[in-house]
Length: 341
Ligand code: SF4
Image (cartoon, rainbow, N blue to C red; front, side, top):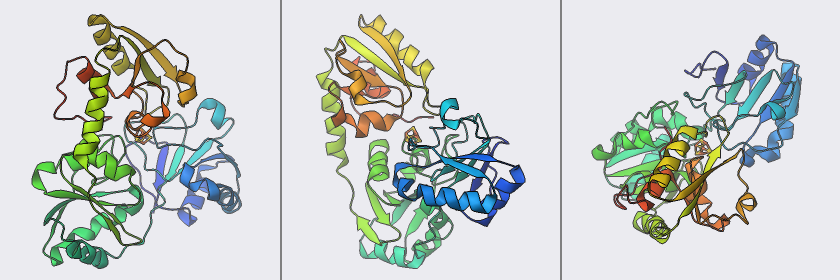
């Protein structure tokens, strides 16, 4: 079933690649389609393109550049003559304006028996009041897992986030406001999905323990050491207190462009007697920052660039709240995650 979210009339959402998508493509009269996939789906991209082309009766090209998220839509050069973009693996970001008609295929994963998962939670001895957060692929569990947990004597609470999130309980790497909205009502969070990307993000954004449960494999991961994670960032901030020459990074991606924030940070740096230069890019390559006469950087683009990819950069790279900590305008504690609203 397709869903219409408040992204505008030129966005539609589908749970998976299948007849509903093909029918919608035919109904839209699309002749030239650009298929955009994240890195994890690149291997299947060409078979999927062939499947869509055959079933929908349209030409399908594949974007070479893997997309990071629904913040990262094809540029005019990438889209070329396409009259429709199909973006796989992401939900739309409701407050990101779309330049062209885009069908989001969320690639929902139906695996994960809620009673089995609740049993794993009970056997793992997790706290009784849990905030539930889901990757988009496993969001169907939001409708059934709380009742299964309740049968085991647990309470599963699902929060509603801000205008950057399409669904209650949704995890987005730059926005965990669905979790933050219920943090004071729960003892811990349980993330349903795979990998460490979202558990790490939740650990930065909230001060509750974050457990992670892979719904398909039934593997339960204990909480990340948040104190160590935060201490690393605080040490980094402390190390740049003497930095005088700052580069302020701004992405041109539709859902990552925080030019106004960058200008505000530039003014604050200058008010403190520092020099600050705004540097613009689409996709950031660490090599592009080499050889510059700058002491440190602050990234107003995707917050996870500074947090997760720090080791790739030769100079310190901070988030905007960390930059304000370095300027002495925010305290080092409590640590503030760079939530992108
Ligand atoms: S800004 Fe970063 S975390 Fe947020 S949707 Fe884009 S790629 Fe994901």
